[in-house]
Image (cartoon, rainbow, N blue to C red; front, side, top):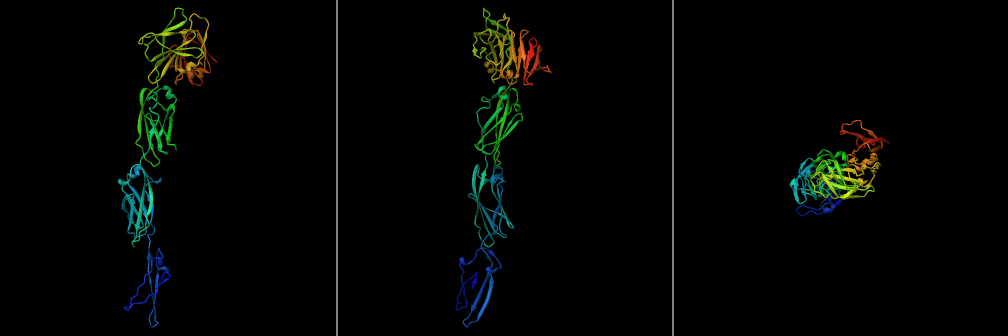
Length: 454
């Protein structure tokens, strides 16, 4: 008897029967029909030497063919995110026709029997067995064909990522104290934090402005809102919402913080009278057009840039401010009117001998002036001369870059690159509006003051 090139010789029994066994190693594995490897040939010789032959075709199928996994419902990134996991995991593949089963294990869960249609199969792993968080779960699929052949297992790891982590904002309260004043708004708003590498962070303000940034390889993100994107208000609350979507498509529930926005500075101090010592050489106090409160502070500024805070010798609550230390003639008094947000409106007052016939030159580049946001300059008690440019003005004023100058006909101001504004509607009676440096800064100047352009 010959099969696949292997020949066995046997002797028939007394009853005329015979048998032989071809061992496993003698049989070629695979699937084949009607070929040379399918032919079984038998040659019989009796005791008289007579010969008879016969043959038989034996089909061989020792394997499951066309078995493969073709897709999973993990999307193009091959990561099962939370939204996908909530629908369960669908796995599809191919298998030979008439296969009897495809069984799938997901980790320790299963087996789950696939639905087979023709040469394709599909199975859904239930959502409730898919773990939360970030995991790798082994998927194993095994097929059985109609002849009982069992395939080698198909094994792969399924990436499961159902969360966005970590996602925080760093730096404590927004603005440092939960409040944004005019100077802070003018400088823009910087926000930063931590996040999952590659995650998309969207930061949205209540006014509709938003910024989008991607978390870097170091797990950090940062963004900035320009001053033009930020609101102006007098103490209103602004919500800031933070959202994140990771590379797998998971959406963080997000969080919202609030910050107070107060960009309106209080009115600058208006001096209605002043008090000097008996000799008339030192300024010892002033009277304002409103009561002095703890929001007011008083400073002596020297022409060389020295600065010292003045303590009051009288109680608060009246328009009168009496200084413990006097301000000598030729030096400056600065009155700063602040608020809880850190906005300030400073008034610069020159103490001078009212009987002097000479003019005092004011240098706006005094280093001490840059410590204040001046809104007004009071020259009413001195004969002065000064030159003002847009750069000078911007250096000593607040974010609005605006200064009002009160004085008289004995004061002279030289304006560099300035123009009388065509629209004077914002100017108070008795004042004229000038713009400096291509509208970079604004000056309201007492009409009695002599102005020249240079």
